[in-house]
Length: 214
Image: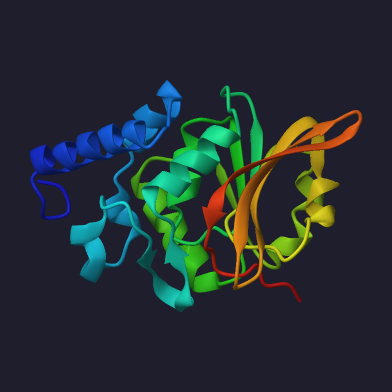
């Protein structure tokens, strides 16, 4: 038994989730394997734990959400991780995305403006055995300049315009993945930092909570 649910049931739910993500177009074998191994139920509130493996966003504390598994997988796949990267995450939230990244990258640096969420995420990640995640409580729009540059940056809240400050903390040939837009329309995009400038591609329409800046 784990968290009151038979392990066999959890394994089945994760297996079903992996199958669903593959059908939805996620192809990276490493991403699929990790999505099928991280216990998502540890990152949601108790009252929504039964829906942990459904492909939908769920409310968490402080008026925030945990993204639906497909969006987590899509953003992670777009980072093109090989295992050696230092990744900056803006918006720790529940810690679920950081848990996924921790198994695919060398180091994860994650920033959350809500101290309550950051502390909850630290506890959840510790229970999952993640030891390569560094936490900071503060304004994510400013990034983490003391730890820059980063090989990858992922923003889990919607910026109204291109995040220049964070782009400056991205290493050459690095990738930044973020939703950009307002409450009416947001587009999830991936940019690569080339010698000629940003090279971008749109991933999908999306809906994230706004990136809050001081």
